[in-house]
Image (cartoon, rainbow, N blue to C red; front, side, top):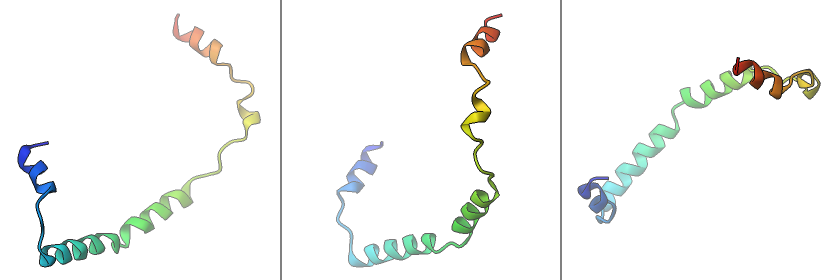
Length: 68
């Protein structure tokens, strides 16, 4: 991190700057595309396979096939 960025961490802000930063943060949170996109992605996922489907798989045999 640059020195000027570190010093900005300790800089006192005015009430105008604070309110402008809060308004900007609220505007980012209210963006409807972000929550909707996450819901669409999660809605499109299928359920995870059951553990029984993985019983036939053996990690040792897989690792052995990689060493060939």
